[in-house]
Image (cartoon, rainbow over all chains, first blue to last red; front, side, top):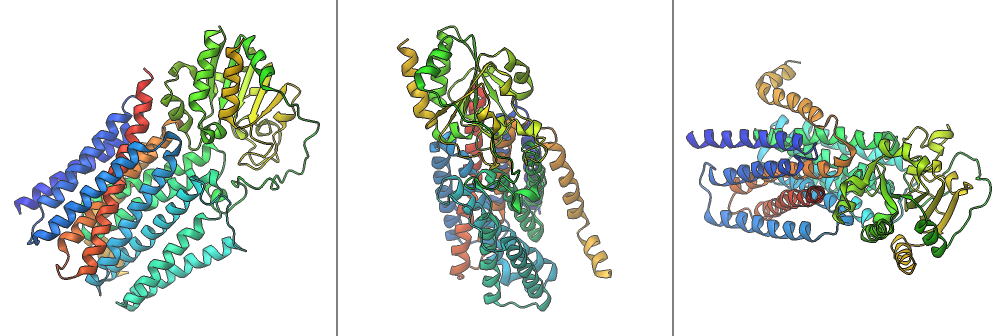
Length: 464
Length: 102
């Protein structure tokens, strides 16, 4: 009894650290400490579970657990330490999938032990379904972000098909609970069915929407963990799981809001499809021609400017040009040019990702300007250098009511005196719509990979 | 109907926790700047690694002769650890970047 009591206290402490940690993660000054506090609570809970367990357990089981934990710690640690900053989003997805798989496996093992108990059976099957969807969905999201699956794959009538499969899974699980069937065959049909659904669920969604999908699957895994807590009457799993499930859901909506999209829109299609240029839907063809420019022209232009604002986007992250752009910034500053970065809240591969990337290169914090602060400054700016950003500078968000991004807050770069846009090609951004900014009189296009272009610019500027 | 009422009264504590935690989760995320969305998601990702507790309990309670259960449990503990350790370390690395700026 004494042991159980102290384990309960450890769980209580751990639950508090999760809440506190998550709360502190929401403020820049306390974020890192918050993460450490939650990690400490988790360590306590894990150690407590192992060492305060009541009951006879053969020694070799302890050894197996120790091996699994040591192996997982080493692998997870190395993977997380070595990953490049630009690849972090897909790593988060990978780890999320691991958690989902863990939850599903627990259900698979416990299935035979809780026969005949309707409530426990519902919990177990729920955990298997949600955990499996989270696992296979996260793996697809991971593959999409690291470029394994480039194109969204859409089966005919995929929305209808997916919904039918999902209903089928729920109905089948319901039947299993109702009939009290202990069939292992049924169990594995359910398991593989849910895995397949996870794949089909994420495949049709475009790569650029993966952050939203990962956030959603993140809250799924939280829910799966909570179901495990319900099964065992384990408070720390319950609190941690529900907390993440609820916080993850809110975070998902916040991400959608920042892109002016609804979750339904993300999941059931519309745009979000990086590779299809034909979905513009507005029907209005852009008028006029684009103007191309050269490296040396841009170098001269920047050299004689007073103020340059850099607008980094997805393209910069993909090209891993963050160090190059920092070098360009320092070079221009040494020539007496005032340089700033204008950061759109959803620039990069994930919301806030651009700040992380640029912070990595030691860009001074006061050079990173947020959207609301920097927008009034564009009219006094000589050159705006847009690097791999597209939708976040599209004036259609202001002017074109029929545009899917209408109403999204954007950076008002068109107010600047000159606009240089670096892109690899004229392909539309992930909203799949044309950008009239490129046809603006003041805009010149500088085509090429962001990193290569910036490095050439640096070389050219050094020669001046 | 009686079953539902039975269910609620038998599990009233857990139901309280679930409902309160839902509100806590919503409140905690409330007005977080978009800049921190990525680390926050990553941190939350690490916290749901708490599922590892369940995996450990499965192993501790497993029948020593049930090889399949032990094997699956081993994998579950391994994956859960990856989720926890990888999740917290990657979040720390993201936040380390924010720290340097001052």
